Length: 573
Ligand SMILES: *[C@@H]1O[C@H](CO)[C@@H](O)[C@H](O)[C@H]1NC(C)=O
Ligand SMILES: *[C@@H]1O[C@H](CO)[C@@H](O)[C@H](O)[C@H]1NC(C)=O
Ligand SMILES: *[C@@H]1O[C@H](CO)[C@@H](O)[C@H](O)[C@H]1NC(C)=O
Ligand SMILES: *[C@@H]1O[C@H](CO)[C@@H](O)[C@H](O)[C@H]1NC(C)=O
Image (cartoon, rainbow, N blue to C red; front, side, top):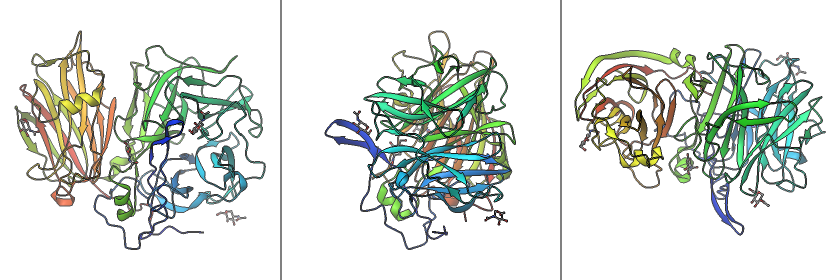
């Protein structure tokens, strides 16, 4: 079996693109036949390689899991090249979610029911403390079928070897369903005498999550009704369904139900490559239904975990810290040819703790506390005034690899620009009103990964508008000036609205995790998150700088705490 080594850390891109077929527009895994087995022989180039983000060559997360003191991360991986193809379940383990050890792949094509690929799935730890993996196998007909695998040796603390019993597959699409659009089984949950799990799919352009039930965890029967379906979304994938507590930030086991629990359904949209979620009620009896609360948009314009480059996410319950943890994948935004040259592609974002905001209107996400153990040298700017057009450097840290936490105070909101109610798309608005478009209150924020003379920079900022009856806060992470190199880079200005009430407490916070080619941003304590991938040419290593800036007529103040971030001592090597 292949052993991963530093030099041969070849990875893949999981590109899903629009492919025009005879039937119209379809999203599909883009296959780079010429590139998918191209192995780079030279040591991987380190430029843009992240320092503390999990970054072996990798792709979709299959199933994160905590088991007997060890975190397992399974991810989709192409052992033979830096673009999508030859998919296996790569496997890494950690005791702290910071340091990772790479093991041999856990699951790879070897049986008729997965001979053409081992795609995403999930792990479930049964009440007798036995973990089971569900995954999608691609069979000889290219059909997507659902399989299970169990550890070969429960005494092995790392669960290196997995067995795929011969009674697989456990679930296949019936005649009413689309056999080539049926994938990514979820973590199972149990209510009453039955286990349940979901498989994502489509019926024409309707996104579907089919529900399956089992008494013994072996024989699975499709429920009469899907758990949920939504018109006109296209294919759902990587569905995730889990409970959150009505109050507090503790996580819940996936089987939790009851009056103090709400449920979250998240789906990844294959057509657009973004995800959205709703919060609602799960009614297991008598009909096993999920009803999204009326106040949530159930479709393209729904709430997102992250308004940037973020896909194929999945949560798991971590009983050791009583929290729910979210993993998401951030693909490269340069070209497939670049990925082959670099020898790697795609990173995992920093795991995020996830809970229900006290308002009940959204989720909150925050980097797991363990990441703070990597904080080194610290600098502070207190009560830093920023007038129109000013920017002030945050000096004394490694700005290319840093953790920054700023609180902005806005003494007066009178100068806020009027908000036009037709501005419903935050990303479009960020595109129109960038950091150099002066405003009333804002734009103010950080210039991350900036060159000394600010030819290259990735601004992350807020702009505040006067709405109908309250202020509207826009948050943007703009990659359009992030690199002097233009060809082939995907450099959008991502944006999201932030649901904060500025009327009494006139402050807003921003935390940014900066790591060479990634900037992960958390606005207002994790209410709005945006991840950008950027490829500076000048603002690299010690030539990267960090500034706070204001380009609004209203003077604001910034309180900054910033840390250099260390590399974990063990990152998959
Ligand atoms: C990366 O993801 C973005 C969406 O987040 C998508 O637009 C882009 O095409 C993807 N790039 C590749 C190379 O897969
Ligand atoms: C199972 O794992 C334990 C602990 O690593 C090891 O001592 C034992 O030899 C393994 N058993 C088999 C059958 O491989
Ligand atoms: C089934 O799904 C595949 C893959 O998404 C798609 O190409 C095909 O058109 C679908 N068939 C129908 C009948 O919707
Ligand atoms: C502020 O706006 C001015 C005018 O558009 C622009 O020249 C300048 O670069 C902006 N400053 C920052 C820090 O973005």
